Image (cartoon, rainbow, N blue to C red; front, side, top):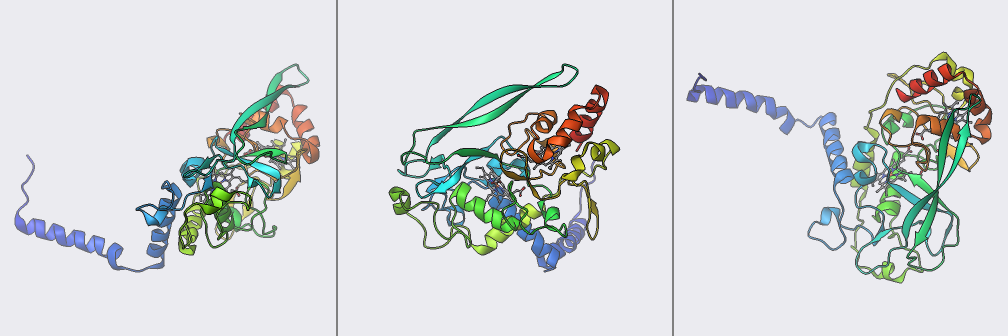
Length: 349
Ligand code: HEC
Ligand code: HEC
């Protein structure tokens, strides 16, 4: 039978709890402040934003043109997803740099997006085959006339480990997003807030409307920034602390095949060795320049390649061409046994 608590024990329990809780409530250590920053950043990353004006001024300001109402919709648990955006290869004065598929109020959306796939079959020497598919964007319901540009797809990548990649020494500063065109997690977060969600912020004080988009420009908007500096910093802080990445040492075959020429397995940081498998540099594999994709979040990835065209690691390897043509060839020439072993090794990351 459970013992009944008498009043003096309740009092001492309350005192003990008070002492345990006190430091959390009162102490102002840097760590506690940082924790608050992490929690604040997490909430702004996860909470859905709403259109201005709304009763909740902390997270209104979505749009007028946008793609999703929360970071987490595209980066679930900070990870990769099937969500994507469509970029204009030649940004223009009508549509800007990216197609927005959603809008607030009576602002016309830029377009509806559908993806078709072109397929072809890749052959190994021994007769094994793999079917490869490439996305082709089809736009309909164009809100502002003809789109004068070719289009390309970017899948939402995993954000885990970016804080660690930020501290890799002796590499160009610009190393964030899939084309390595942003110098920090913060600038990329500001870019995402503006382009993907239509949130004005210190780096993008204007709404995400081009001059030709009248209703977008005339939509109601707040006098203050949707995402002020300290909240933007909190989001970047949260993202930089997402650290679910693998630490798998390379097998000999990896360098022998030539993959480590770009997928640099490891770096020694001040306090630990990390295993991202990327040189953080841009290479042309046949379809423009992309940063060598880090491989350390591969195990939890629903797809691969900048546009998600590969369902498996094997398909991703077979898409390598251009600067990686000879490494791809060495991979294709492996014995079936080595090939399977090799793919298994990467799948573990
Ligand atoms: C509509 C989907 C979508 C939303 C919403 C979105 N992202 Fe992304 N995110 C992407 C895509 C697509 C990329 C790749 C962009 C590129 O390379 O051009 C990306 C890239 C990034 C990167 C760079 C990753 C790297 O490897 O360097 C960061 C950081 C990031 N997003 C943070 C955020 C934050 C913070 C938010 C919320 C403010 C957000 N994203 C909202 C789709 C999205
Ligand atoms: C010349 C540099 C280079 C070489 C060599 C190279 N890669 Fe890559 N790799 C890249 C780049 C750049 C990307 C991103 C391509 C894209 O998304 O368009 C990539 C992407 C990948 C991906 C997809 C990862 C993801 O998250 O989308 C895998 C898997 C991969 N490489 C494995 C390999 C393997 C295995 C080898 C050796 C057979 C290899 N790579 C050789 C540069 C290289």
